[in-house]
Amino acid sequence: MTADTAIAQEPRIVTEIPGPRSRELHERRQAVVPPGVHSVMPIYIDRAHGSILVDVDGNHIVDVCGGIGVTTIGHTDEAVVAAATAQLNKVTHTLFTMTPYEPYIAVAEHLAKHVPGEGQYKTLLMNSGAEAVENGVKIARKYTGRPGVAVLEHAYHGRTLLTSSMNFKGAPYAAGYGPRVGDIYKAPNSYPLRDGLSGAEAAARTTAYLEKVAGAEDLACLVVEPIQGEGGFVVPADGYLPALAEWCRSNGIVFIADEVQAGIARSGAVFSIEHFGVQPDILLTAKGIAGGLPLAGITGRAEIMDASQPGGLGGTFGGNPVSCAAAVAVFEQIEAQGLLARAQHIEEVFGSGLRELAAQHPAIAEVRGKGAMLAIEIVKPGTLEHDPELVSRVIERAMGQGVLLLSAGIYSNVIRFLPSLQFTDELIATVLRVLDEAFAAEAA
Ligand code: PLZ
Image (tube, rainbow, N blue to C red; front, side, top):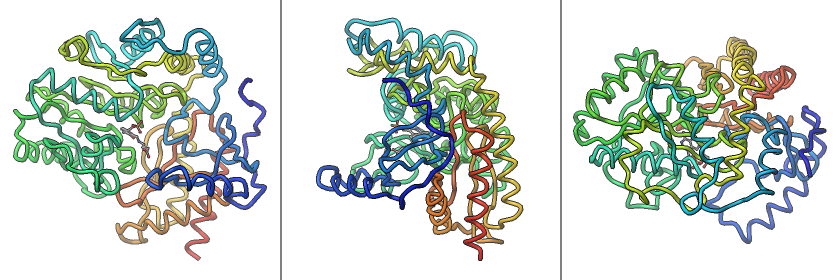
């Protein structure tokens, strides 16, 4: 079996949405899958290629979500499928901490090459974004000998017990699963649309808060998404991240960039932190790194990574050979397919189209983001009041036209766009037209 490259890269709706087969599967699922595992769109997918999902009813859906920023390179990219298939046929598992293999090293080399910073960088591989965050915190604690974990308001870091305690949004992620993990401090972030602060002012507010509430000398790390993902694609004001990094450096705090959503070419740079001129001590990757297979990286300065004792780090599936082979292909394809330029092109075309929409529809308060990580924040016109109902109605209308969109933001007040880097100008035009019609219909 090879990838279904024949899938036409356009929307095609042939049944009601969800269609009869999706509804049947959804019914079947109720008996065996708990409701805590909620699916935003109960449309069951059969196959996919490039930027198109084909559901079990034969509907072609334009994927502007990419499994939340995972299929950055596109669904079933041929090079990724070939590399993973070849590895699958060679060896699928040995456990790197038992009897290791080369692809793990190759991924670590790619990460070390791309992470912005001088000196030696080393990588631990795990399976998921949350595990990357968990291990980043462990490693920082071991290195500093301190307990405290600083995070920012509006942040999202995962669903394990530690990471769900780090998320800004307690409900639904941590509610009912307590006691929550202690020694986590949630400091104000930079949110230019809403706080009106310069980067320096916002950073001073963040660090003053942490010095008062946590005490800098108690902090092992500050974990920051350079561009917040679930929080609503919040791009911090210029100078904010460099000021935080400098403050961390002068206080012996490990600066951890959570690049799980923004990383791996999505933002138009391999890592989104590059846009801000910051060299992180530890950089976390997952999602897009292996083109859809589970893999996560914790890449840090050698001195920090080397502080952990042999046996302190790892896990059965961490750095699975098939995932590693896929990740190597992803890194190779970033260059071979000019994916950074593709992301920049998407920012230009999609971004300017969204700004045109914002000029016509007063519910769009702001267009923001970088590369193929773009968003619009939705408000009641003339105010900064959130309008999550409008967000969900626009998303529903788009789905009816075969365009899969996703919300973001603490108040579900943002529509985010995470197209693959294969997203064509025609598809961008389709999404813009569908949005334009949806906002016009809602305003009528
Ligand atoms: N850090 C910045 O965006 C995952 C959540 C999907 P995992 N975000 C999408 C869902 O509904 O569970 C994320 C992230 C950032 C960490 C994570 C966690 O990554 O691979 O989901 O564990």
